[in-house]
Each structure stands twice: as C-alpha cells, then as structure tokens.
Image (tube, rainbow over all chains, first blue to last red):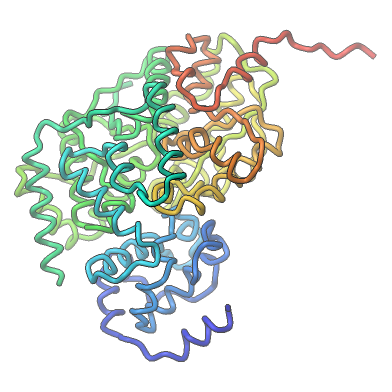
Length: 196
Length: 300
C-alpha cells in the first residue's frame, strides 16, 4: 500500500492552481517550507485511521493533486491535536491546513470519505447561528444515524443517564444580543461567497 | 485576584461539575470570576472553522471584543476554548489582512476589537498567579496514598507557539498541584496523547480506540484516578468509559475527575458542592480509599 501511495504521489502531474489557492489560506503560506522529514506522520495519534499521512498530504498539495487530497480520509480524520505542529521543524500549522482543505471540500461539494463529516460542520455552525452557543443535544439529534438502531439506543441511553445527573440542558441557552450574531453570520457568509 | 470569565458551552452543560468545583475552589483561594456578559461560542477549533474560517474567527473576536471592555485578563476552564480564543488572537495579530476582513464583519455588527487581550487557562492561573505553596496551605485532608495520573490532553499545552505556560511534550503543572495535595503523581507517559474528542460524533470507532489507549496506560500504571483540565477529554474518559469497556471487552473502571474536584476534596469541601455525584464513573472508590485508616508498615 505504502509503495503504491508514494508512486502515485510522484507520478502524477497536478493542478498548480490548487497549490496557489492553498498558499492564500492562513497556514498555507508555509506549505512549500515542508522538508518531508516525516515528524508529523510519526507523531500523529490518528494516523492508523488515515489513508495518507499528514506528510504525504502536504506533498500532494505541493504537487497540486487536488482531487486525491480532497477525496482522502486524512483531512477529515485529523483531530486537531497539534502534536505535529508542536514538533514540526518548519513551524507548519498542519491542523489549520487540514481545516482549510475540509473547507475547500465542503465549498466544492466533494463527496467526503466520511459522509457524516460535512454534515457535522454544517449542523454545528447552524446551531451556533441560531443560539450563539452550542446546544449539545440538538447536535446529537441532527447527526444520529437513524439506520443504526444499536447506536441510536446507545446514544439515547447515555443521554438519559447524563440527564439524570443534571448534565443535559434540554432547552438551549441563547445569547441576548442575537442580532449581532445574525449580522456576523451574514458578513462571514458574504466573505465565503467572495472566495468563489 | 479578578478575571474576565469565559465559561464556554460545555462547562454550562455536560461539564457542570467542572464549573461547580472551580467555583468552590475559587472561594477558598479568593479568586473572583466576572462572567463575560453575553458571551458566545468560542468559535471552535475546527467545527465552525472548517465550515467558514472567517465566521469562526469573528465568533472569537466578538468574545474578545466584549472582554476588552472589562480591563481584565480572560480566563477559561475549557482547554478547547482557551486554545481557540488564543489562536484567533494570535492569527489576527500576525495577519493584518485577515484582521481587516474580520474587523469588517464585526464592525458591521457594531463591535470593535483591538486584539491585544490575553487569554489564559485556569490551570495557568492556579500555578502562576496563586502558586502551589498557597494551594498546599489550604489542604485540610491530604490525599495520602492516592495515585494520580495527570492527563493534560492536547490543546492546553500545544502548540508552544500559541501560548505556553508548560512544556508541550511533558507538562508538569497539574502534577505539581497533585503533589501539593498530598497525593502521588504518577509518571504518566500518555499525558499529552490525543483522546480523539473532536471525532466523538463522526468517527466513533477511531475515538474509542484513541481514548482506550489513554485509559489503559493510566490503569496499567496503577492509577487510582485520572485528573484532567478539559471538558472534551473528560467526556471521553468518563462518560464514554462504559462504552469502551463493552466495545473492547475490557474492565477499566477508573474514575476521571476534573483537577478542580481533586483540589476540592483535599480542601475538605463538600462532595456535593464539587459535583462528585455527577461523574459518570463513580469516584466513591477513591473517596473510600482516602477515608480508610493509613496502613502503618510493621517495624522490622
């Protein structure tokens, strides 16, 4: 598998407009600084669940392999734990880079390797937009897999136990100046549209 | 000592025992929290950021903007909120173009944000403003014989570029508090391993695997309990522990406390006031161990 990945990475000619686009993102400015030392790959606590290592993803961005990068599981599995960045000799903010890649996949409607992920980001943002704060039970409900009764039961049972201990707020807490939130959401959405 | 307090969404709900115990500890140590009025979601490390980065930064900026008017340093209990607010401040300070974009969004909402305000974690405040000596002075019921694994997780100490008050590879601040309380702090190797909290709703199997490793290494070290300064970590280690046991066919049964709950126990505070009845894995085992008469080794 590993050999196949590295062959694919060096053999393909990519889309360099993708690299230029990534260089405009906050941590993308440093993307060409990567020396492929592999510290991020060796440090990553979630590497076992990824198809490409973070080091490979960076190389693929450098080569402009947009389709492979946005279709990878890696960008969604990154848990933003920042072990890679703490150890990176070139000071690259890898989780922020992964976040920009997720953003690009969402914006371009690229089918995600983990389909619940784009739904999670959308649902989380919508709840914050509505109340100004997160309401955990609503997020759970929005993401519950209705086709998996075992999981549904498991979540409901944990939810009930937590509710009995007073750890579940049934009604969301909403900020007072919700108008400011609406204005911020409108403004940020406009900025996101301008990118396209 | 007075601070602008940012509670965050978890501390208001699933992590109430963290809020309760820190409030109780504050009373003893004479720390005052003034809640940031009408605070909103911190902006999230990745959940909102991946959907709309400018929105995430603007959410952070609104909180910091309100806090700037209070002329106090910002303190939060949640490692994720601490990280998100700190990172947003740093990104906006270092990138004038980005700050220009965020300024436009929040100015339109009637807000202004200078960007210089300092954000701190409660553990930082206890270690550096209060100091372990003062904490030790208030110990009424020393935790003699209790073996504690201090679990720091990710976002409290990483990356060092954001704002560091402890070592990013082998932090010690919580261990120093644990020892000041009379307990034994274990040399816990997985103290900064990631529990996979951000994957809990979308990639559960991955998260279960990651949290299992964190729990098992503490268990194998002989820890009586784990302490943590983060509501995200606490949810995985405590509320998800039963599921991990059944998923992997393991018996773990290790109480996970907020470090503030452990401080409260040593201060002799009422367990109810510390929310100890709210932990999902009951801490009664460790309370019983602390009450048990100390075994004196026979003279040889």
